[in-house]
Length: 233
Ligand SMILES: Nc1ncnc2c1ncn2[C@@H]1O[C@H](COP(=O)(O)OP(=O)(O)O)[C@@H](O)[C@H]1O
Ligand SMILES: [Mg+2]
Image (cartoon, rainbow, N blue to C red; front, side, top):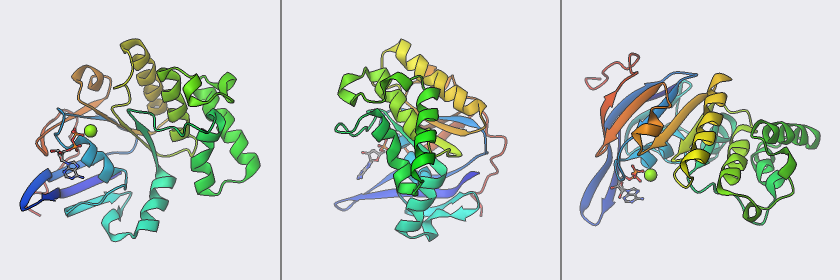
């Protein structure tokens, strides 16, 4: 389970303090499909970076499956990230010199997965996203939608319990964007927790739950029956 308690992220710009996240509390249960939705600059990516163990809060706590992430050192955070979380980004973030197969292989190399199992998992992940026939292509030889599907295969190849997607359809036309959302729906059906970040309410409508954020605050949450108010703690 994902749980944040009274969490703030403060950036100091000269003498100014900017609260990118301001005393936010939130729980996301295992297997939920939650969208974090808000306008540009509202703190979405800051929140995803913290939830993804890519960054730590300035104040408050992030507890992932019972572990307070801010108590871990960098190596331990990287380990938890590799084990539990798959990332999908707006701009795919594929390595241009590597082919499809090699891009999907990267997280398994970090995990130290053996050769035979690597091959098996990569083939399965590419089959799941419908790209089995493109394993030797370089990213530049693929459409945007295909590149994002490679990124999805890379995110799911480690069998993570959580998938975090930051504006995954932002660079795609609406038809291709729908295909990417349909893949996220499928991953949700297999029991994974999905955290979808978007500025677009019509995309957020695909999720089970919408957490709206603005100026670093949660404005509304239409599925937050599990959220207790921790502001007094
Ligand atoms: N590394 C940083 N240093 C200073 N300010 C930052 C940094 N990252 C983000 N911000 C600021 O924090 C606020 C939230 O940013 P961000 O989380 O990227 O918003 P969103 O993803 O919703 O567009 C913005 O005002 C942004 O300018
Ligand atoms: Mg962002």
